Length: 209
Image: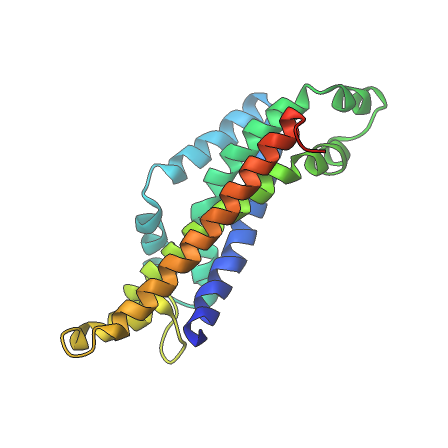
């Protein structure tokens, strides 16, 4: 459990930051459309072109493995994926009657984005957070295993597995227990995400109040 502190802290902060940035980018692109949307989405596509772990490794080998940079690296990896999801939701909301009414009233863009559209997108955003949190755990532990995440003496599941490798034949449980903890955390986060997704689908279909 002690090893969960660093891993879950990194995963939590980086998920909130990454999804938060993705929400801002996705909603701005969907609302303003045209050149703004095209430019933002091409930047997101460029970031998504590289595998998540490789992009995080490139960022951290450039700036160092400080916990702040680890959080920023994971957040940058997640930002384009979240931006794409939120953009799709926001495009549907942009054509809604209450958005048109806000435009007719003369409300400014920031007001419409954050007071009208954002509250109606909380459901999909919450699901996105739980899904990204599971990926963040895997990414944080992978970076820790490679020596680019939490540094000794900080406890970290990935780092614990790395340090247990020389003793794998004599004490395999030193690597097995952190691996089980990682798997349990990821499965738990995915189950929560699946449950929220199903509840959101039922609510949108009118089967839930």
